[in-house]
Image 1: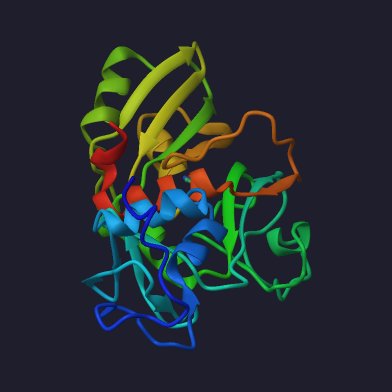
Image 2: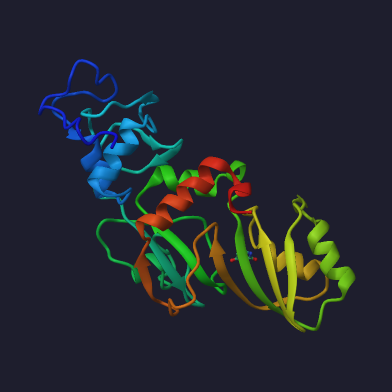
Length: 262
Ligand code: URA
């Protein structure tokens, strides 16, 4: 059993090159705390050379500073900073996606715990419902919202009338909007006026503008998935923390790009 007989002495050995400061916390303990697996499973990942600290392969027994060190497991960044929170909110209609609204309208941050302070990851229009992430993890926010990572967002759009096959095809192939051609989208007609659309760009009011462009304005818009994150049971206005598995799969998608989900 790799690692089983290698229970290290309390101080890092001379070979513990990555993150080996005596003052830090044991890497396997930190990994277990953030949900990578049991302490023993984490020891095995380290012993198998699958964990890096600041870009160097970690050795069993090394210690890390959770505030400073960058840890990756199998090439995927793992958030180990204490105090990071990641919430999934089902945003109701009429709530604005901002940390504070000068006009005093209800905001998404008022629907989640006030401490620690979190910020929305991307935005939904005031009239759009559905899944929204909020976090104090600025690094993850940056990676999820950055266009180069192309995290998929899936929406259910109720529209006026019933789009023709040609209209659906044009949504799939790309629509010329005033800020340029949209990237190919995945589109399915779920019911005569109900479209499921998956996009990986984050342009302002993009779905509404795409539907306007095909002559079928949106009457209701719900975001049903962000990358690998979905939840049909979360009621409007409710929130929950992401599970360690969800957080890991989100980290995987932003590390590998949108193809990781296909
Ligand atoms: N597209 C829109 O038009 N609105 C949203 O809130 C999200 C995507």
